Every structure is written in structure tokens, then in C-alpha cells.
Image (cartoon, one colour):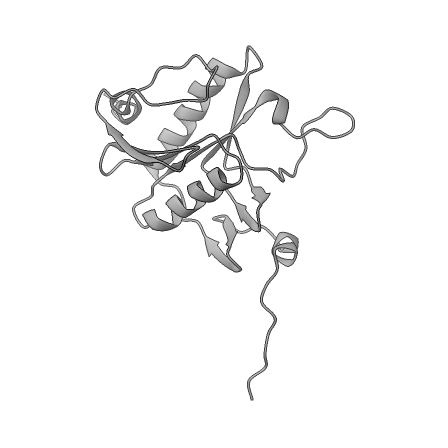
Length: 185
């Protein structure tokens, strides 16, 4: 005998306990993100620190690692979510909120070896469709950065090409600089 089950709703997903590694809710299904490995972890932490050093002192923006963002029927966890300072959700007392129910202004993903590039690109496009200004997909295997802009135009930048950042943030990066962080000697 087969018992029919109801499809999982976003609300029901959000009530489930967090998993290790994190799970996302995408188009009615749960997808577990791969556990970050060395290159992924170093790129994520160094880029987050670099963005925060450039943007936080002037209260322009803040970069958050692995922050759950729930909007537009999905609950995703970009590797880095950057929010303009005035869009960071706050509680009534002025503290940062725990739940972010809006898309990041800049969504950054680092492609892991076993991760679907199509799925990650789908999340970046979802962010753009819901108001994000910029999306990056770092591919350490290719030393390339796939850029998605507000017009859903996709470009791939490598080498010394200047990478776009949020307007107003004084930060100059190239793909060569970003992937150079992986060299520890």
C-alpha cells in the first residue's frame, strides 16, 4: 500500500532542524550543500574578510559567511551574502535579526568539486530575479569567476580582469588576486 505524502512546504522546511552540512530548499525539494573543503573554505573566509575590511568601517555593507536567506519561495545559503548596511535586517531593539527574509545585494558562491554548477547558477539567478545587484560564482578548478549582473547578463572573468563589486564599495579585485590566495608559500 502506498501512502501519499504532501509535498514539503517552505514553512515546514524552516521548522526542520539544521543539518551538517547545510540544506537548502529549492523548488519544493531539499538539497544538501557539499561540505566545504580546503580551497572552498579559504576562498570563502578570505573574501568575506576582504569585503568586510573595505565596506564595514564606512557602514556601506557587511559580508556574512554561510547565511540562510529565505525569499521568493526558496531558502538558500550562499557561501557569502553581502548586504548593504541599510538593508541588514534588525530586531526592534536594533540588534541584527536571526532570520534574513530578503535576498542579499551580492551573492557569492564557491563551486565545490562535487557541486552542480547549474544548481549554483540557478541560485544566483534566483537572487538577481528577486532584487540582488550582483552574483559571483568562483570556480577554483578553472580559476574563473562567473559574474551575473542585474540584467541577468552572464560573463566569465579570468586573470587580470577587474571583478565588479557593489557600487560604492572601494574594492579592487581580479580573478588572479582571488585565486592567488590559495597559494600559501
